[in-house]
Length: 250
Image 1 (tube, helix red, strand yellow):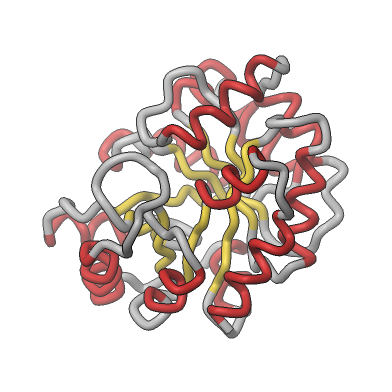
Image 2 (image 1 turned 120 degrees about the horizontal axis):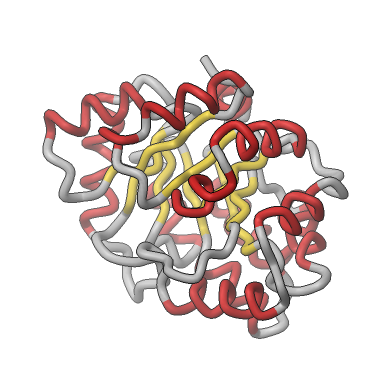
């Protein structure tokens, strides 16, 4: 069992994992601390990439702002050195950045920064072994994504290979808020829970505290990305937003 999985199992309540784009503003780490103080159980940090395949308009816009500020993987990880929270950190980015950085160098850098897991949204399970072996040497869990379209046989293998937790996508398509909770979110959560031997967190399309509460009956927790980044873009309180989700989840 990875350190990340052990930490999530110890939470003892539905897991709440907000997402924050690294480098979106000069004070972006303040949003991370606000989320932790408001009851987050883990934080997903996005390292912006110029050609994202899973990010919807809200997170794409945040990535553009970050990149225009000169944000790089190194600047995000350097900023994280000032992280003072106690909950696990998970990095979400794309494989191209890891390939250019170098497997060993990137895994070592994550470990030095205190990051416990990584989501590489565009790295297929069948091609992940080379990276995963290196990451394991540095104690970094590689989290895999399960989509509503993932066939049953592949889903079992994906859950077995995923480390830390399984990221269950609530809907097909890119990240972003939806007016109502899609039936596919509950269905996918149930399918993943039936075969996974580790925590299952649902992300993509989790838009409101009511959505989160409904999904907590089907999964071990939720990941909220677009609502957080929209709140940041509008100048609102991330702490108030996260506290609302925390209250709904219990």
